[in-house]
Image (cartoon, rainbow, N blue to C red; front, side, top):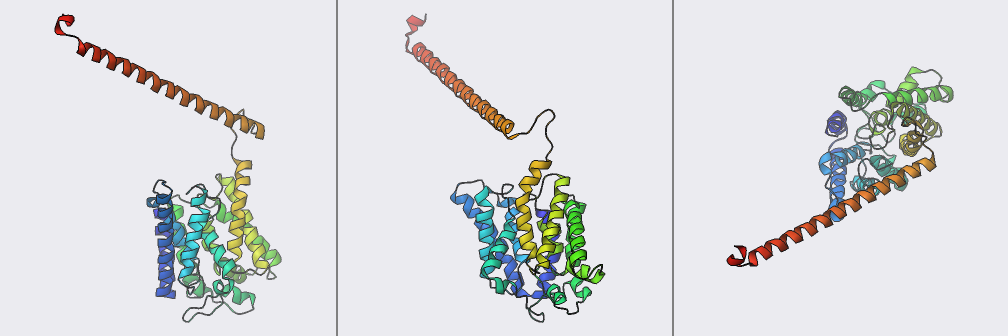
Amino acid sequence: MFLVILSLLPSVYMGVYHYGLHAALIIMLSTSTAVVCELLFEVIFRRTITINDYSAAVSGLILGMILPPNVPLYFPVIGSAVGILAFKMAFGGIGKNILNPAMTGKLLLVVAFRSKMNDYSCDSFGKQTPLTDMVNGNDVNLVDLLTGNTAACIGTGCAVAILAGAVILLLVGIIDLSIPIGAFISFTILMILFGKNGWNPVFLAVQYIGGSFLFTVFFMAEDYSTRPLTKKGRFIFGLIFGCFIAVFRLMGYVEDAVVFALILCDLTVVIIDRKLLPVPFGLIQTGRSARKIREARRRRERLERERAEEKDSDDMVWENELDTDVLESDSRTPEDRG
């Protein structure tokens, strides 16, 4: 998780550089709220303190990065609190949540404050992103998309910074290319077939780097807690993810397509893992056999507890007898001992 934070810093720097102090405050509030909410939840419910694993900081940091740079400062607080408390800690903490906390926090904000969440105006940048401009028939400068000098979410506007962070994660082995390759394949095919621009390199390039597609594919979709466990499963997950993004963009949800797509894909992970996880040799994984395995495990655990209790009881009896013998020997007179 600490390496993930390091890989996100180039995008954070470019976002703050282009969008100013307000963007920095959004990221700081989002990150600190996520950490504080997780800590308070664990203290109140007497859970093990886990904020030192950096997972809450990563979720809060990513949420701040996927927000528009001009949103009110209470937006990141609400999004982080809901994402951590309702969609992470309520499920049992890291590794047990089925939905990405940062994206669910943004989904709440999109539903509750849709007009404000679609306003990307900041300083010299207009309200609309290059992706929306292209849909409306306006010209788009690819160099600005690469450098982040354009209207976008705080951490998703600079494609070069995103790719630099992705290379770091690939080199240290934290992510692989299964999900990105699957997403790029399905997304590209559908946009060529139904995007009304055919094999247009500029159109496809803007689709890749003009919204949050690139950032979501390399960072959010690779979340260990919500991605499939096998490489084959991750590739299929990527194919589904790319299809969902293409469908939502073609339906007109240009900027919010990745939000809806990732939430829906996270819900398919349970099915993908159930179908693709390797089965132990000689074991037929039917529902009935799975129940029998769970019952046998519970019986074994119950027997182990009973044996442990019997052992503790025997030890206590032995200690009581020993204490009695010692007391009797101490109560005898020296003549009796002789």
